[in-house]
Image 1 (cartoon, rainbow, N blue to C red):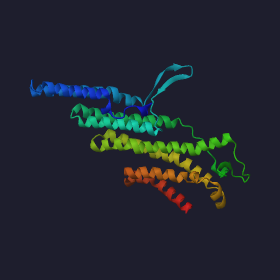
Image 2: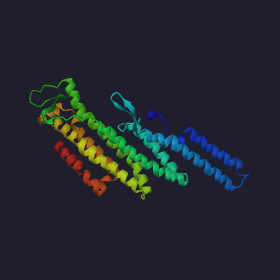
Image 3: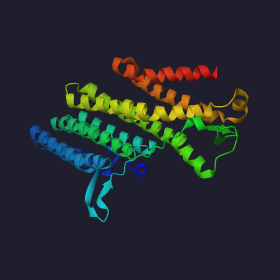
Image 4: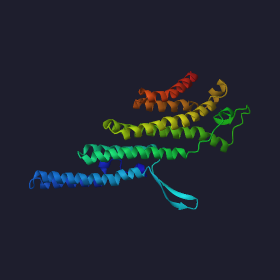
Amino acid sequence: GIGEVCTNVTEFNWFCDLKNMDLQRKENKEDVVEKKVVKFEEKHAKGILLQVIQIQVASRLLESFSWEEEGSGENGSIKRRGIYDPFSIDQTKCLCSMLKSMLDYFSNCGEEDGQILREETVQKVLKALLSSVKYHVERMVIPIVDASKITIKQNQFAWRDGSSEALNGETSDAIAYATVILAKELCTLVKNILGQWYPILYQEKKLHSHQQKEEKAITSLVQFVFDDLISARIMPILHSLHDITSSGNCSEKSDNVDNLLSDMPKVMIDDILDAMQVLGLLEKDGWMLKAAPLRVIAKQWEDEKS
């Protein structure tokens, strides 16, 4: 799987072999040829290495995001998706590590072609990442739970009509999926984007601020996180979960409600706000305003606990 492969481009055997061949050729010929010939061969070796990285690493990293139609089947076109799962923490860390090592080499190789490849790679990754995330999120089924009818009795979902009747297993599992599981998955996705991808891509934007395409693409990625993931999906789910776990009188809650479940909405919002704080997003006017509802509801739920 993705998590088992090399995560640094300089650790590949072929990379080390090409570097060693270049060093050996330079040592063997340094005393018998003119310096300009050595420099030419060194430049040529670096050019080959850049091409290999582009073909063997950069292109395959981009393929892990993508999907394409392979033809027509009985039920329509057949789609082949990339192997990257944006909800996976391990896969995200692996690909981000590979991307960072690749961009570092492009920037430090001392070749103009390296800078060009770096800029092209960043632009392509930003576009592919946003497309991949949208692809997965748009295909998520998000059931709507009427929190006004559900509560928790003895750590089980139950009707709120006073019957205290626990819901059957299938219904209970559906509610758990629509609240707890979906909330966890979406929050993990947000933290993968903001905690793993954004720092690498934003750092590249800072180093090369003249690239307006990169800046626009990064803004679009963060915009999608705020507007689609947090505002349109995560917040409604957490509101439902909070309403379900906070229903009933105080004595019932203290005895019957699983503290981990009742604290989950507040904990998830705090995790998202912490990620934004680390990145400095809460200090930027546009993103600070978008995060305001999160901070308000976090404070409100904190006050309810006290």
